[in-house]
Image (cartoon, rainbow, N blue to C red; front, side):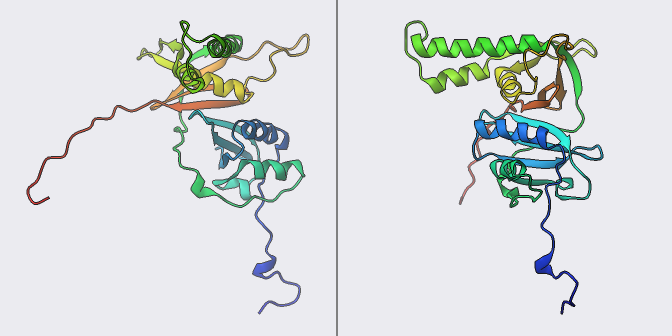
Length: 245
C-alpha cells in the first residue's frame, strides 16, 4: 500500500528525452522528417559525457548521424528509438518527455565506433558535385537520355549509385575508396555542411573527411556525418541433393 506523500507506480515520472541541444536536434529532425515523414530516430550515447548521437536512415539507404548535447542519467542516456516527427513535435512545444519507444522499428546495423580518415575534401567541391547531379537529373527528366525517355526512379537510382569521388589512400597505402553520390546527397540534404554563404569575414568552410570503418565509408562534415555500408560479395551455393529429402 502506498502511504500518503509517496509516489506510487502510477505517479512515477515519465522518462525524458534528455536533449539539451534542442536547436541542433530540432534542425536534424526537421530535415529528416521532410525527407521521410515517418522516419524512426535512434538516440544513443555518443561516448562523451553529456552528448547524445541521433541516428536515422534516409530513403536512399544512407545512415546519418548528428551528435548533440544531452544530460546524463535521463532518457537520452540509453539506446532508444522513437518516431522522428513525435520527438520533433515534443521539442517544438518545449516538452521534455520521451515519445513512445519504437525500438523494433530500428533494423539496421551501425558503423563501428572507431574509424580512420583517408582524405579531406573541400566542402565547396561536394556542393558542386551535388549540384551537378541535380542538374543532370532535371535535364534527363525533361529531355531524356540520348533522345530516349527514362523513368524518374531509374535516373535517380543511377545517379545515386554513381561514384562521385574515388580516393586512393597514401598513408597507409590501401585499395581505392569509392564515395558514391548517395553519401554526398546525404551530407548535403541533411545540412551537415552548414550554410553555403556565410557572413563577410567568416572563416572558410571546414573540409569534409572521408573515413572508413570496416566495410563502411563515411563523409564527416562540421555538423554531422553520412555513412554507407559497402555491399558484400555473396556467393550462392546450391544445396546438395540428399536422398529422402
